[in-house]
Length: 245
Image (tube, rainbow, N blue to C red; front, side, top):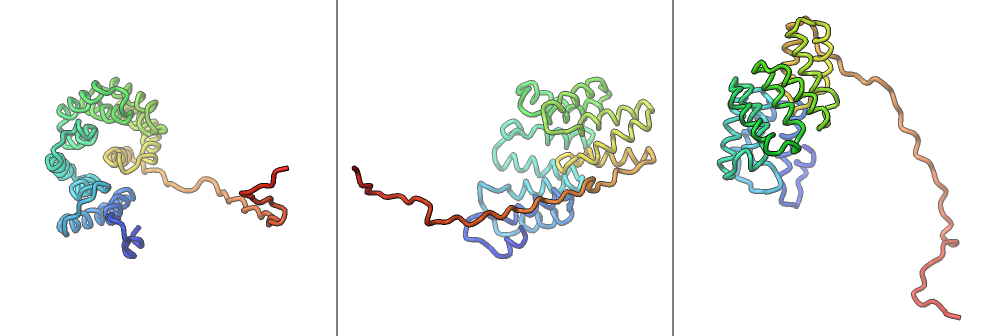
């Protein structure tokens, strides 16, 4: 992507914005923030097919764990586009920012309203609610929502393992907590960085480390088969004026 940006293109696109996305995805939060800040002060660029600089700043600060700034830029973005969280379907993001800032009841009311209105819209929303419910002390509800999120998303175990791990830690089941939180931490992506960070913090409290991710199987690609060259003299050709008998 960086090479393509340096080479330039003739289309009215802004590939530099995509670089910020990749940097946040890879956890390179400092460079994402620097690049987002640089672009925000550069010459304005309007393109409906790329995120706004406010969105990029929001993502960069969320990547860094600065949820107050992420929320500030998020709200600025909504105001600039004359939208609400409901208009853009952003309730889960805002709820997480509020949760991470300790504003759990606000977060719960926001995500609960979104789920009530569109119960089948997105499975990840149930995980967001589970995280908030756990912090509110509603442990059984949190486990139920995490289980529901597993069946309605591409979570592959990370959502339920995370809440189960936190709950096991609460109950004093240390080894179960470690196993569950390790599995969850290893599965989380950049959009759940807040949960990844907490999993790492809790593992440290339990005297454990995140799993070391490595290739578990060495698989080589099969060789590309070599096909014989066709004899073109034997291939019938199309005649637009066939002779009729």
